[in-house]
Image: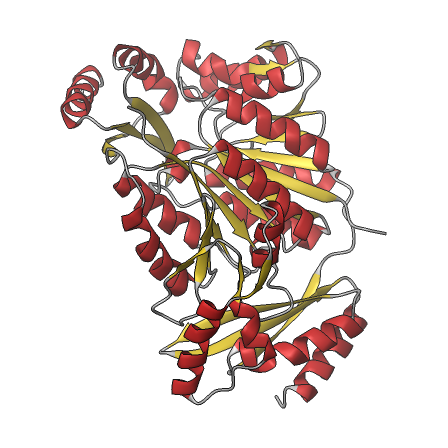
Length: 240
Length: 240
């Protein structure tokens, strides 16, 4: 049976302007691979309501699960929660359960739960809260979309809150062969082995180090014995 | 006048599986920002023909320019060129101009221009070649889509070949204020200043260092004097 599929939507002008290098996508990709969920698509859009709404609708329809990152803080540029609610036609407002979490957190830290911080209690009706052990303000799950923070520490904590509840598949396994020859020399062999092991994915990722070309050949699949067999055959045919 | 818009399509299973961390997106984002081109969207899809075709069609229609990265090498998993051709209904085959470049390159290096390497001369009819000073095999431009390699060194060289020919806009300028307070404390001020400077974008990017929360406030726009004015007012109102 095929593994469940997922998509990710990253929301943030700071990534598209080149100011910040995204870290959450790479983290989520690794976690989903371990969990047997097939990350099939990532989109990065700016802090623009129509773009966020259109992307979340398209990804929610095309994939089993969607993860979003960014735009759920207290400032004026945090518009993700409202966009997700609109995408699903859900009402959004300050919810008592989220407000209670924030109230307890700010009471303890002696800070005021002011109007800006209360924005973080805006949760769509029908959504389930996602636990945030780092900084309390919750994410939420609406339909098949998990809405999470952009700050990497908080994003990672929220992924840890969400993942155990998701149905995973067979973890994706891989073996890598490093070949110190150009791709063009090994392409015919790779193609023949890929045909013989159609249940696996065989990728070739070229590199160049000190002017010398080589490639990492990565054999991926869910059946370790088949991966072993394909890797052994590749190593033999490539004289490794 | 608004700056031209761009999108990027990254093609690669290795990024979606978490094996490789993408570097090209961050590089392109920075280059486009300098050049006054507004990167509005990035999509990452796997080595899957229907996904590549659908994404390139959607991005080509929605943006002035599209850049792709990955999948134009000599191996069986390099399917980008054929997908782009199909997306635009263009014929694709081994083109004499690209073949001549490769023949000269491999003659010089004493390697055989075999069938796999000849795949890199598959260029759609009507496309213009993109110069590759690193490893010769060209990218190409078809309609408003620039098709480039995934290897970062080659990708960067191709960006350098393409960018001077594109109409840029006003470079996006920015100033950053670091605030050692939580976002919730400064949100009301940011919102008021953002309203007063509607021609600028004011973003707030929280961080957490050793358990202390702070935020970088980034003021972006194309008019340096306006950015100065907004930044000065923010610094004053935030007591920095």
